[in-house]
Amino acid sequence: MTISILVDTIAEALKQGLSDIRLRDKTGALRAPSVFTGFLPTKRSGQFDDFPYILVRPIDGKDSDFEGTMRLRIILGVYDDGDDGQGFRDVANLIQRAKGHLEKNQDFGSAIQLNYPLEWTIYEEQVFPQFIGEIVTSWTLPMINMGNFSSDVEAYGDSN
Image (cartoon, rainbow, N blue to C red; front, side, top):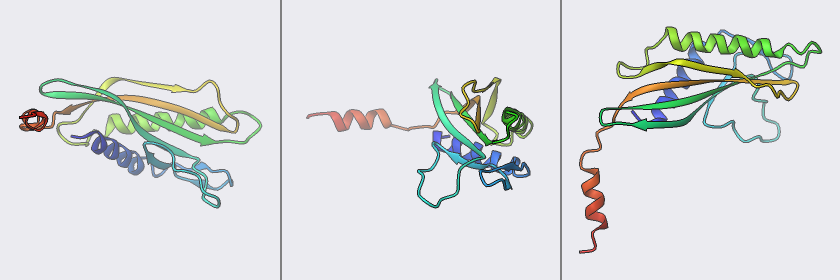
């Protein structure tokens, strides 16, 4: 499994699994969080705002002979311009739902395994009215057989 395939698989699982959640956007309308991979899209004038959103991005990984592990960062953002400063509750609920969905629905392929512990945080330094948190997950993946990749590299680099 490649890095991109895992990122896309987890993003799609969260999109489907959390589609019933409704959070306010900057216009006050209720909608499901948008799900993105890597980074938020570049802003263009007239485009809708990203909030609420879920962002899935790879952090790092380690490989052995037979399997690899990869960590993903899942960033969750909500918008709450209420005077009570309770936007952290929406982030906490979104984190809880996302964690629960990943733990309960591990149908990401027979060879992909979610590892524990799951780590989560709600950022202390919030930029009102935006509230952001994250989940860090670790996954065990099968190694991709690269065949004779190393001999191809040696042949290509050979000056004879």
